Each structure stands twice: as structure tokens, then as C-alpha cells.
Length: 206
Image 1 (cartoon, rainbow, N blue to C red):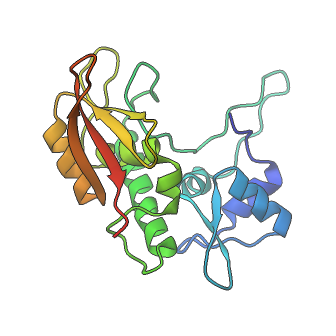
Image 2: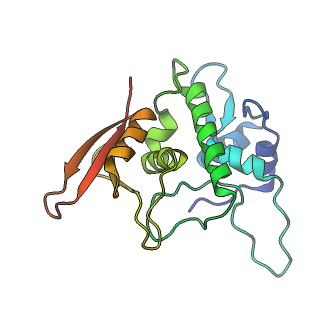
């Protein structure tokens, strides 16, 4: 599990430009934020650093409150977690819809900033290195519900295939339509051993 950002790193995140997410800090601070998944380095000159969707969520959470002296340090606050389906999920709450909307908007902005042609209709490099989280966010942002505590819903899982995830659930065709609209390509398959139907989804390149 990634360690939480330091107080100095949080100050850099909180000082990001509110419109673009552009960061200012030392080379060491910016490199550390990239390693934590909170920032990315723009591939085109002048190679500025910008917040990732997780970085935007951390900035919006505001300053981290100081813990009581006898209490353990809290887990990192404000970092959005995509719901991939299964037993362990973030607790539901009234703020979840807003969090998902904001995370999706941040991801669309990340596409605009990092895709070579500024395209927002297909996945970006961050999504290709976080396939399960990216596909799950696209599904939840469209209103689909993950499997949780016995309630049917989608499950997104990694596969041995490069740049592909498996999506299981009771509504494969709607899931495929959602992912294709978000810039993924999908095919429906049957597992040979279990005969379970699932989608194989990959981020579209063109």
C-alpha cells in the first residue's frame, strides 16, 4: 500500500492551480507525487507537472487534520477509490455520487492534458496503467452499481492479457455500451471451465 503524502507534499497538492491542476514545487517533491500517483509529468515541453484524479481528490479534501497525540495517524484522506465490485468496497454514503462525478471529470481532463491530440473520447496513459480502476470508474460514473454484500452488480478483474480487463455481472450488454462510449473496445466471451459469460475490455488507441 502506498504511504500517505508528507505534509510538504500535501502543501504542494493544495497549492495546485484550481483550474488546470498545474503544480509548483521542487523536483524532488514533484517526483515523489508522481510515485504516489497524485501527479503526472506532461509529455510535451515544458514538461510541467499536473494533478491526477487522485491528486484532485486530495486537494479538494483540504488540509489534513492533526491526529490526537494518543491516536494512530489516519489513513490518507480524499484519495478516490474506484469500486471494482466484491466484498471489500468503500462504504456507501450520500457524497459518493459527487465523488464519482468529480473523479470522472478529473479523468476526462487528464485525457485532454495527456493524449497527444488532446482527445477526451479515448483512454489516456494513466488508464492503461490502472486498467481495473479506470474501467470500474467508467462503469460507476455511468450509474452502474458494483457487486457488494451479495447484491448483484459488476465486477472488474485483471487478466493475463496485456491491456485487458474482465467484466462480470448480470448486465453485460449495458456494461459494454458504457465502456465503448468511454473509449474502450469490448467483446463477450464464455469461460471454458465455468461457462461464465464475461466481457473482455481494452482501452481503444484510435
